[in-house]
Image 1 (cartoon, rainbow, N blue to C red):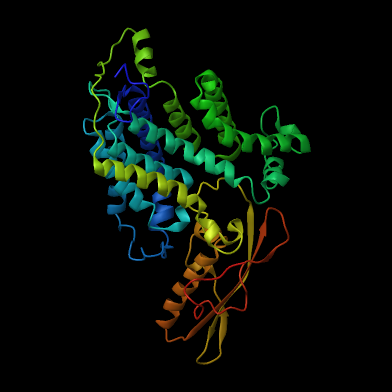
Image 2: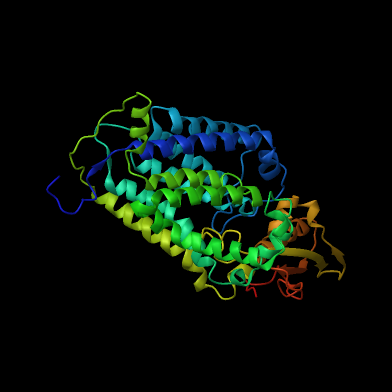
Length: 420
């Protein structure tokens, strides 16, 4: 192996850095699942709603009834601990990916970028050995983990090149709402500071991965990443994403860095052999397909008509993070009975939770899903329904305008709702 000029993707590497990430991953998720119980998120998102916004083709998926929904999340907690400390980490990761992925497919209104990233890394931890063992970790495995950490950074930066970001919206709006921030908060209305946040966020996202890959700038880049994520956590309260990305960013250090840290503490870890591990044909196929999919999904919104931050088509699974601010007003949702001509208003609070209403008002397709749900209930009472919705939205501080045509009958409209 020493005589080879170019390292092979099958060469064994020290598994210490991936093992550290695995432990951090499991601990962060265990804390997060505990928050689901402690903060009532299971009740809010899965038990209380009478209706769930299904993903296309997955309309049959529904949350478990009580008490099985609590059992589901209790098992996820045990699996998270198994990933961190158990003896069957890859099996635990595979089962966690299955259970956590299922929970996040029950309702579109619960979508979070960090939950999607958790799901992806759980799959990778099931595919790639993430323990300190004599045979090591194949080089392609570490590169695949680094690639997945890079994806949110790179595509998050690319997304900032469009829309209103470079004009200072919505960042300027958000900063004026957070002037209690220590030290800098009193300057948050100043255009020069807004510009620093706008351009700093863009440059950080696009530059951080190259800086982490270059050994000479790696430490400084890591310190910058930690500070960036801590500021984001303080400003926006975006859940586990900052901690998760900090843990993932450590994967760009030398694979043996945790080993050296243990040696300073007088501890030793198993050594790593130098025998290359052949990559199987199915592994090669999975790696290539994985990379293609992770590049294609964030770009798919170009296939849809309209502006993605308005229509929301292609917004999920694309790392469009903190890019737009939407405020909505429901002027009316009207149910008209075609049989007798009677009309009446529909109050979404009779069917949806506050979180579901907020998300629905941003997504034209979800508005139609809700209309079809109301129509089904109306038919059960002998009504021939016609439903129209006048929902007006302000994007990044612009004037409120209708999100969809308020004269459209959402029941009779074709399956794909064409949005502005």
